[in-house]
Image (cartoon, rainbow, N blue to C red):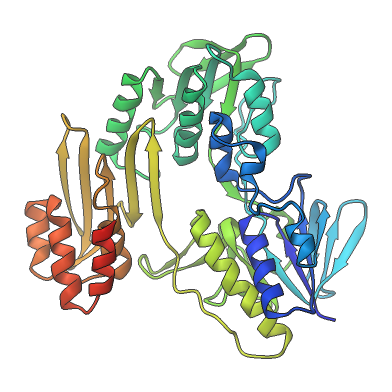
Length: 431
């Protein structure tokens, strides 16, 4: 009997297991995760901290016995290494698992900054349900909380902390908030918004050390020392692929895959936050750690694992990697699509209404919109995505947008209709 082994019990792992089971009712499936909880979504943790949901609300499937019901064997273990020659995976307690096909869906792990005192009691990441429990115990009304990092994940955590009524300070070493998603104007607008909401924001600042105690003492590079009841490290994440070192499975930033989500090793696949897949917009391989990508990659990988086991050609192709970030920071919505920083030789236009808290930044390559940023501009999110992902040729509308970027809707409807993409344009209008 064919054995499909899946490493990682997040959204990619669960969806791949479901896909395999649907296509192959008799094959053996093992899902390995390193946490004791049922499979859950990390993106639901802020809503747990806000009190909007209970822990069960973070679970990926309503029934805690769902995977067992579809005959997926679950195993809690730490993965140590992969041996492609013997088709085995080493796990803790000196045990090994054999496989016929393998999916690496181990996701990401938090970056651990080399800061003296970062391991002190009262310093937490916000990545697991165990982390959430520890944060909830300390982030009570009026507690002094310092957050290290104001990137995408950091801003989501900040929303949850603010809802708990803490006194919040945020330290970001970049020159603006969300520096990997927003340009200087947009990042500055988000900072001003947060400060107006009562959050102290220190940009261009590093945490130099943390001194243990109650309270914790946090020394900043600007010369200040802040006291905190809780420090949250939100310095970013990286693909959790250290166990693949010397395995022969090719990795760059993530596990490198082709359009079938197969690695350089036949029968070995990757999906989700740890996978590096080809993006048709930027024309390069990228890791795009958002749940819609994980879900689509898992479906493609699962289908192709079944096909491979049966000696058949690949059953499914990945259409592309979506580069989308939509962020709600204390009520201010910002977005980032595609190559928001632009491309060499490209053209760029910005429009800002500071009083209204609205901003648009558009990046062009020829007459195609290849990336954009927005702040406080919610009505045309679908249009921006459609233009970037659809690689719509704007023709004369490009000059119109350079003169008035707010005419995105008109440009999309006219250009998409002319290129036979009317259905997509109608969908964008409904959004």
